[in-house]
Image 1 (cartoon, rainbow, N blue to C red):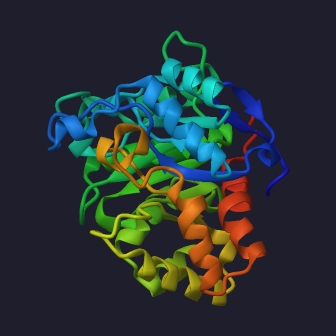
Image 2 (spheres, rainbow, N blue to C red):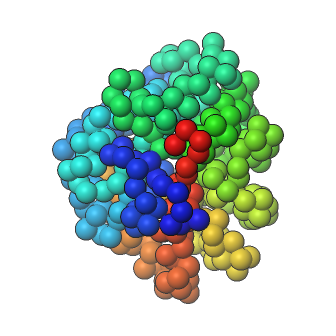
Length: 314
């Protein structure tokens, strides 16, 4: 619940009420994974541009951003701390791993067992990442398109174990919105708390019955590909949000853009940038009849509640 516990940012722990409008799944600094295409477009390696992008987001009313880049995708937590301090935007860093497409050729996740993975995640949220002393505030795990590989299942199970130890929230990557039910099953079986799990990229596959069931089980629905009309037009995302609000599930939705390309960011000469949600999507939601209280719950209260934690090692 917003206002309880704390949120662990790269600059230290803050009250959930300090966050304001929060994007729950974004990237500031990345390196392209070897198996992914469009390497130059996927390379975000300029702190000044990242700071500029966050400054625009702050002017648009943004207060916080969850930076879900993990080790195999070029995580640089010291850069995130500098960017957060310079921009005045709270930044939450991630531990964990995404999926085989990202770690293949970068990290040998296949050789690690569940206990080793859980120990790594636990250490990075409680002690610090490497020798930086800077701690992650969210655990990331994911799966491939239409399948959860054995290694991915170990990462998901490890994420649940690390959450049980620390109380840290979990955010997931679903490839093209697939395998969300399987992720939920694996996480729940391993003891994760659904109320502190956001299942990501679900707006790439707008399956109302499935999303409603997951939300009723307590999971947060990560509609985090906003503005990416080549997956689904925002009009359909808004239609789904309206249906979920009518279902009484407004408290189970978060928004973001998952913008990891230079061509998607204003500071790199592209767009729409992080400011799209506060400047364009929020007014659109209002025009479609979603009231200010519901909008605040989706953009402010739900992220704060999801990110708030305070486990035994916290």
